Image (tube, rainbow, N blue to C red; front, side, top):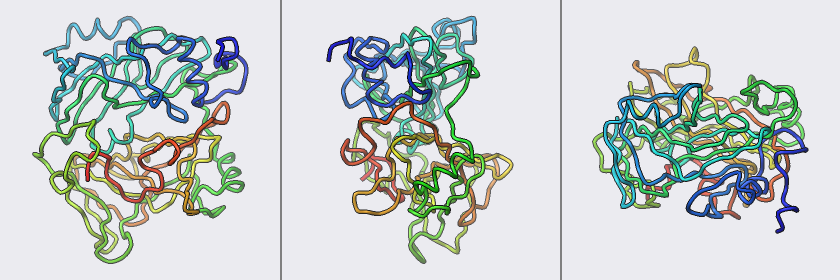
Length: 381
């Protein structure tokens, strides 16, 4: 395609998240660039997978550079150890690391970016956040930014093996128009979400079934398919290392304890990590994306869903079924907490795409979690 015929993502059109064809146009225009060519499968329906660079730095603490500094200026005072990733290296549980990513940005003045962990990263309790130079917020890149990107990586439950090219997080690009707030997002209001649900049912294929309050409310399933059914998994401690690039490389029983239905109640132990599932089967129509947001902390002493991005088309079923369950990554805080079956545990905020995507989440692009029920990450067999 001639450059003059590429979509001009930075000019004209609706505000909203950019779909795959506009991300590809940004790549062709060198607005996103890397020394090693970006692979075609890094481009998802409305996001771009990011790759680790060749070096990791163990640091004393998490940080933001602030408006006056670059990340490297802050790193100079905080780094403790340098690690090469070329042949693979282990990042230890409980330690904080910083890795420069291979991708760099030269964003137009109308394009900002938002990042989040990939689903497989969240499901092994690896807390990762994007940092840009002169930033005051994690996972946010301001419109017009030019420069490198970094990943802060904090393995919380398992030590992990990574290497140059490993993909732990992803980035979405947001076209802004007019004079929106600095951190503006193209989120649907509750009224807009109810209207969308009436046109295209978002829950279980039934219009009007969704509970909508500051987004689509998501409830936890603690009964499963009957008495004694597996309703979740609790991470074991003191396990072997998880290879983040190893699909089906690990035995599930060596890392996870299955939990079975017991009266619709589960007591979460302090500072432990759980994989649970939603009661609802969720659908994200192709013209939208969605992000799972933690529920108000006043409603529980836990955090759900660190890897919360749902691509356009999530939940579309080849078998004619309605939606896919959301898998919930749940970590408790410092006190035990009782979860009851059907309790609201998170909410899903839907966002407009600037244009319909040329491809959607699902079997056609070999998506790992389409049509899922309760499911561990791709690393386990």
